[in-house]
Image 1 (spheres, rainbow, N blue to C red):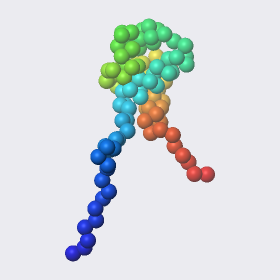
Image 2: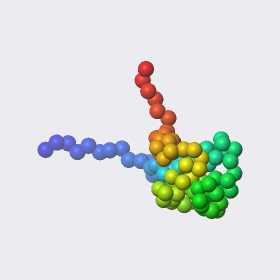
Image 3: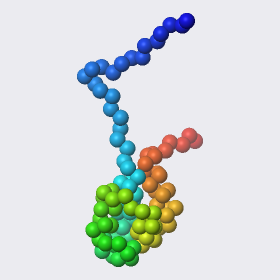
Image 4: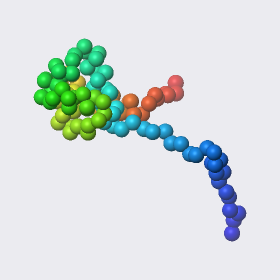
Length: 102
């Protein structure tokens, strides 16, 4: 048989910490909020065009609600975005910066 290799353990005073990843709903909400601010629109205006309440849109933007794909499509559409645009933006936000070799 071979030798048993021991992996270094974490010091007792330094527990393993895993970075907390944002939830998809939080990233999507932030992207929707940023797009609304870029287009200088109010919550009320976007909510009306999307057919949802101002309170619900506010909770979506803050990542507090898990909106259906229909709601996301309605809000994105009210902001002039396609679902593909929103999905790509959220994916970029979740992935973080990408380093490309030249």
